[in-house]
Length: 368
Ligand code: SF4
Picture (cartoon, rainbow, N blue to C red):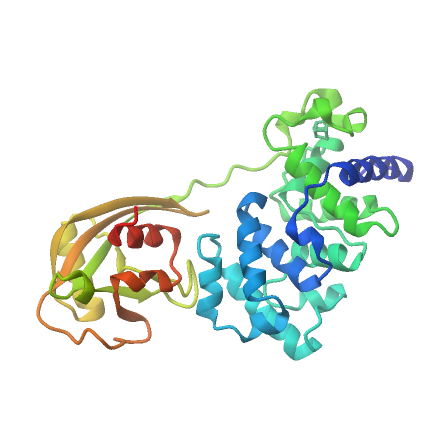
């Protein structure tokens, strides 16, 4: 890989930069030179489309415009501003790293690879992206777009999911950076991958690199990059209790929500109590048993409420929710514990929840 000489590299860079200057999209984070704000955009853009990120980034930066503001914010509020973007560990890591920047670097995002890489959750991609875009440091930022573009231009038939391949693509991407142009060049590669050299049906006919592209010359552009098939996500059946406690009068009615553990999937988010279904048990019996075990609560299962599906990278949830009612009396006005609460239905929106549980909450509030 990487049989590219300096002249060829310079030609590719020149064409890409010319294309970028003419066609780049006007994205809000391109209007700032603030390394912190650029960092937030790069974290949000991982696994997420630009169109989705724009309103999130805008709201987030309005509320947390500086390192100081994000460092000082309650985690729950940060998660609330991230709600719906998914991959919530990104938000938690970002806040931890920002606090580290405040403590160790006096609130200035570090501009060396060693320092920025020492921050929580900052991997090679984020480090390269922030340093190159914000500080013009000549480092590569290889994400899925860049893997795809480079594997096509240079006809690289190596499995990009292998760690050894990453190193090689990084070296190649670094070699291509023209002197003094790291910021624009890295952005041009990303932009080109997002709008021209797209995953399916790349726009080769309007591509500025067509005459230099080895995959196009061989008619192999649709076959690259090579990526080993991931295992399909494991399906699990989940039972969820929408447990109400009150006299049926909407104003007085409260519903039970539970906070997920601080580690693992959807860490720290709130949800209606949910349990992996036990094969062979009826949903009602299963929910009653689980709620008794976990919350020492006796409930009646009233009726089926909704079915929901959600796919994560490694898991697929088949979720069945049931309306339940607490049997007997329980204090309804106080916080029950750190990790579970009785909340008025109208206030469910104040708690950060995953997409599936947000939908259940909206159904319950009669909003959808
Ligand atoms: S010619 Fe096609 S495959 Fe090659 S870089 Fe351009 S868009 Fe990508």
